[in-house]
Length: 174
Image (cartoon, rainbow, N blue to C red; front, side, top):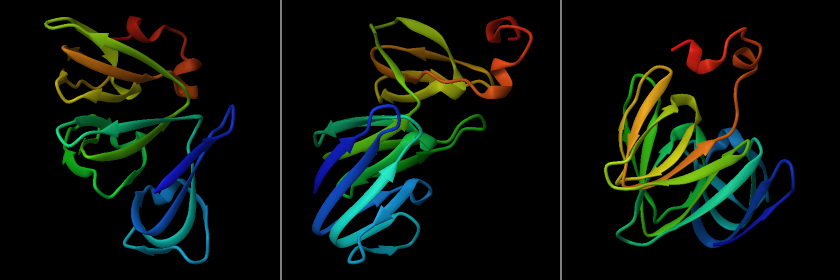
């Protein structure tokens, strides 16, 4: 699988496959070559190209065999099929654990990334969590969540229009 991320403000991901398979979010499928076939909702295979577009920036993650990341399901854009996905249920957010080896692509309006040291924790907006190392422990809440290190955290830097027009700051309401 070959891939290229293009675009400035709104990026898109072009994946070229040659007798290979790719998992991709059909909701974010922009177009594909005629030769690429699909099975189910999100599996694409054959020889040709596929283009996915997100809502802003696209980040790629290379996972070795022992690596795992936890993603907000809505942030996942595409991955090669060697990456295994496991659903993690939560009443506040759908999370997916992705294990290597393989490459995974996530999207969001823009991102802030930080690292939590051992026993360090932060209170974060639940709807802005995009991804985290599987070593990060979390307690998800309706508006805010507690994330504890060690591990890297990727936050989406975006707020809904409803929240932007609210008369009070977000943390004043919790």
